[in-house]
Image (cartoon, rainbow, N blue to C red):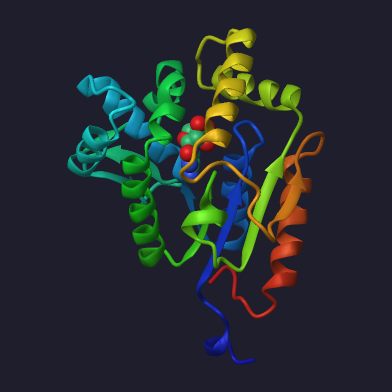
Length: 236
Ligand code: DC
């Protein structure tokens, strides 16, 4: 097939609970294949930060959705990975703090918030049609027609260790008990919400990330992608 007939639009989704390595894997895979990388959790975290800073109750979806629309939330695509911005402010570090993590699942359970962010994610995909996007609902709700959809799994202890390491690497204090509580609480809220709950999308490829290196898991994901999309053009 001539190059100009090769498939240039590629949307790949990666969903799964916190601490399964989604962001690292999605970013590594995107760099390897020459695709853009979208961290949708960062958008929900920024929405939680907006709630904290404006004193909006995390259950007030209507007020929050309006505040998100006003906030000029966007990614700076000049950096790699893209930086989450609220207007001109870089919030990439602030959104990882525990006070944000503590309320983000409640914020993400509000249907009005999800409606605004799902729309923004679909708009981003139109501007960046060669995209690896990760979150909780990317393969089920936001991009159900994506040609390759992954769901990641790992044991709780592996997830706790990974999240604690991320926090330490970011120079934050780590109380392992608090990390466990946070993951368990978020799992519960994320899986039980009625709108866009964390589920394994039907037909998704399930990947176990537990005791394997990033390289090993990325190799496996890449081979699935190349098998499913033999005509796709990567690294263009
Ligand atoms: O991946 P993360 O831990 O940064 O995600 C933060 C929170 O955002 C998580 O508790 C669930 C929520 N989230 C969501 O509801 N839908 C998404 N597509 C991505 C994240």
